[in-house]
Amino acid sequence: MIEFDHVSLRYADGTQALHDVALRVPRGQFCVLLGPSGAGKSTLLRTVNGLAKPTQGSVRIDGIVMSPATAAKLRRRVATVHQHFNLSPRMSVAGNVLSGLLPAVSTTRALLGWFEPRHRAKACALLERVGLEPVHLRRRAGELSGGQQQRVGIARAFMLDPEVVLADEPVASLDPRIAHDILSLIRDAARERGATVICSLHQLELARHFADRIVGMRAGKVVFDGAPDALDNAHVQALYEAAPASGHDGSPQLGAVPALAA
Ligand SMILES: Nc1ncnc2c1ncn2[C@@H]1O[C@H](COP(=O)(O)OP(=O)(O)OP(=O)(O)O)[C@@H](O)[C@H]1O
Ligand SMILES: [Mg+2]
Image 1 (spheres, rainbow, N blue to C red):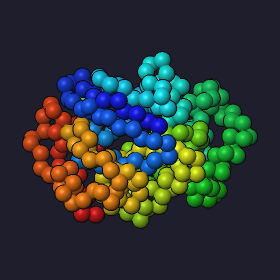
Image 2: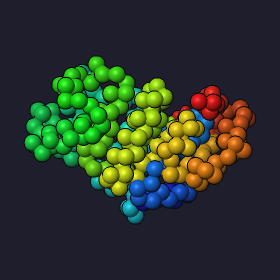
Image 3: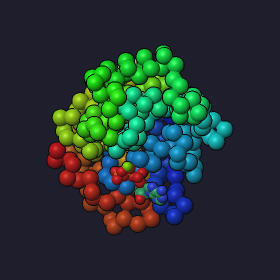
Image 4: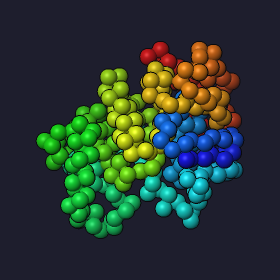
């Protein structure tokens, strides 16, 4: 269970990115964050791995409050899938997947490539799980297509059997068919392990298809929270309709609107 307990976050320059967000995401849920650019989706995700610190309120993972004292331990339970994959392009596919162990093994071991056989076996099994053939194992990650790179990113994310998977627009740079495959992989791999997923998306149709629950955000606030079926056109319009000019209140820009037609 991830609990956002009245989380507000103001960046150093005065931008109020989150405003009193109160949510409980139960174990195993696939929760999609929807909302226009600047709504605070990425910021909310970053509070879960401790990369952004609430100025008010707190985030708890299974009852433990994210704080400097608990961050290192909690981070091992949280994995991230990135929009731009964030692989080491010159490193092999296998090396990238094994790097998912970094929070748990010493950097020296990792740099020298000293991974135990069970870790290598797990990396291979995960690569198979995400549909990458063994022929790719020794290729440099940077040589793969975007969809293949994201498969590697997912395999890496699952190396430490995370309880929570954060995915920030994981399919934004992929074509629609691949996007569907990648979201299926994240959902199914998480389901098999009982992991919770919080995933930000800009594509309404994908959100409706994959989410157990949709949280609509606008200007740092939760403005919709419910099952995909409950999100009607009026909600969508309210989520994305033109807002007053963006300022220090974190009002959204309208960059996301065209994606609604997808
Ligand atoms: N490091 C930062 N310093 C100051 N302001 C920031 C920082 N990161 C984000 N912001 C601001 O906080 C607000 C929320 O940004 P955030 O990136 O969380 O939105 P988002 O919903 O993820 O948007 P997008 O859909 O474009 O990714 C925006 O007004 C943004 O400009
Ligand atoms: Mg974002």
